[in-house]
Length: 305
Image 1: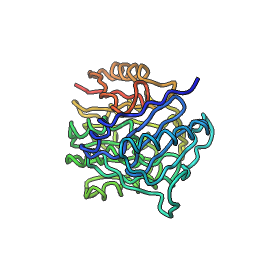
Image 2: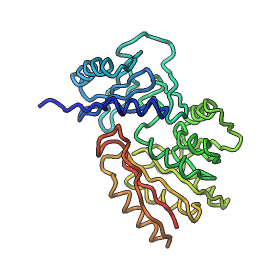
Image 3: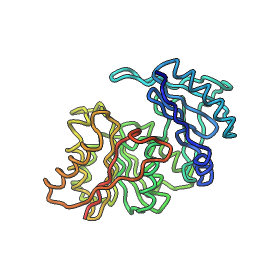
């Protein structure tokens, strides 16, 4: 049985263009997907035959949709505990610069196809970044910040941010994303350290935030102390975040772990509220229009009262 390929329609493509979004999903199948990053394309696949068929389908679809494509990159989707390879150029002119600039609702982000498996922007979090812009937090704590896209969203509506990630390189790319949007970094902090250690320091300093992003990897090695495993450590992470959350703060709980989905996030949120005797409500942002149901990250917003 051949896999089903679901391509977005031209009306949605035109909607993205009109709102100033040039980074989004184009097609989803059981064995992979196709994403647009400006005039570049990234195909993620599990099997070579799926990659080849996606390339053929893309050629037909892009001509029909009048979408210009300069380069096509491909990355093999790694299985659990396998190394994740950097995307490889499949079609287009070889260049010393595997980077490009894309927009999401007119905010700019640098994409780098040569920096590792992840290229710089998680497209399935678009509506959650939109919620940050909608709520306009005064202070946002971005845990596991990666390239700081949530912080750029907050800064674009006047918020100050604290960005925490083990990778200095990722945080440097985050600073670049601020610069691309003409956002000064003077009111923003970039901390290369273990999130749990930083949360303890922020608690001791009695710092408070009205928005907190918790979108951890499934597993992360710690420089010192205990490694992070989402299934074991997410509740402690949320409990620590709740201690520095303002009364009406919004906290994003998000996971890409296949065994740690929506119901687990909601259960942890309710249990954590009960342990700290706090009250709040849960809600989800709409599924991004370019992602079929039950694809992408699971996420829920915890709004405190």
